[in-house]
Each structure stands twice: as C-alpha cells, then as structure tokens.
Length: 237
Image (cartoon, one colour):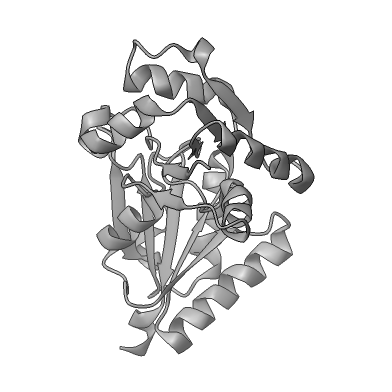
C-alpha cells in the first residue's frame, strides 16, 4: 500500500529552489499519481519542477470543492499502484483546501500521510506581522453579505481583544478593495491590521499598521492573493 505526500506549491512567480527544499523536489519527481484542484495547473507546476517530467505518464485526480466524498473514496485504490501526492493551488495542501478530505480518509484506512516542507502564506504572514503568534485563529473567508461580513469583522475584533488572539483570514482577490474599506470602516482606530501579499515573490508586500493609519492608504493589492490579519491588543494599552 502506498503513502500520501502533502506537496507544497509556490505562492507566486518564485524560483523553485528558493522555497522548496531539494529533497522535496526529488520526492515530487518520483511520484506518478497526483490529486489536485486543477490538474492543468499541476502539470505546469511539475514542468517547473523539472522540464523532463513526462506528464503523459502521470495520473491526475481532480480533488476540488465539487468532488463528492464518494468519488474521493475511489482514489484510495490508486494507492495499490504507488504513492499519491496531494497538491494545493498555492502553498501547503489541507488548509483552506479540499485536500483535507483525502487525508482524512487516509487516516481512517491507516494509510501513512507525510507532510513536506514548503511555503505557507498564512504562517509566513503571521510571523512577519508582529502580532501574537502564541494564540491565533485562521478563519478562512469572511461572509459575502455586507451585514454578515461587518458582524464577523467586529466579532473577530472583540474576540481578539478579550482573548489576546490574532485573527487571520483571506478574501477573493477581486474583493480586496471592498474588504479593505470595510475593515477600515468597522474596526476601531487603534486595532492593528496586517496586509500580506505576493509573499516569497519579488513583489512581496507585508505591512502592519493601526487602522487609523491605513485609512485612505489602500496599497497596491487589487486582484492579488492576500492574507489579512487583525489584532486588537492595542486597545488595552
């Protein structure tokens, strides 16, 4: 029976050797079965890993938010043929990523799951933010509806203040400006807001500032994948 490898992907236009260890590259080159959200993008990633990889000899399994759990269960049979690599669209699989479903099944069937070292935008943004790294929550996406999103923002800020907790979330890139406006409108002026974008690339942008200093200073993050962090500890000072 094969094993499941959790394979890190790039966070943007970055050279492989700067963010993915050589031993991980060698493991990737040895795999013949991959599960990912978008097999087409996975093919591109493998070609960036090594141009000599023949993608026609590789089995690609689609593992997206639309993949039914019953279909995911059928992927376990491929482990009889060898190891499976799970690849996220960016960063590490299993976080805000449908790969967790296959990993969960693997544990239920006593199949080994091996996480490989690579970039995680969430953790990199957190450690560069200056906010509390001892207690934090990743909250995924905020609600889309205006009133629900505003309530969520204020609830996260309140929890951050009460529990000294850093709150991390993401947004669909084309809604960055709308979210920025909502954050600077809904959060208290002293609350810290971190915006992290294009991490590990030549255009990397990571900035922490109080909300009052963010107002009317929207950074160049339109249509770019971003991590947003709020930390309300300053309200206690």
